[in-house]
Length: 101
Image 1 (cartoon, rainbow, N blue to C red):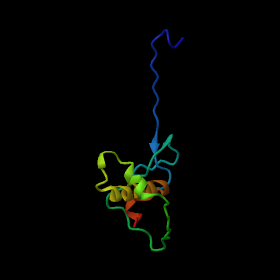
Image 2: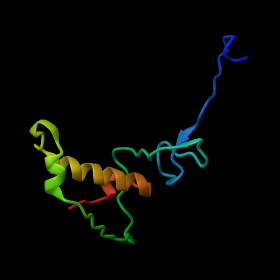
Image 3: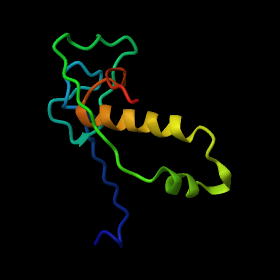
């Protein structure tokens, strides 16, 4: 039985991004899907790009009141950066191609 004898199991998992072939961590079929990683100087968006507007609904006052110890300094910029990173990850794009206003 496994509990009565010491047994060690190892496995190698491939982590990668299958959403964008230009990603540094591109893998067409990874075991674990992760956000795409891009070089700092990634190519600019194509000229035929699409602009999509997403509207987020939430109560900013309620979110601010939930931050402990009055740590609301920089909340908006941190929130916008997190939204930008999450949208870029979901779409397999470099964060520089996502604009949050």
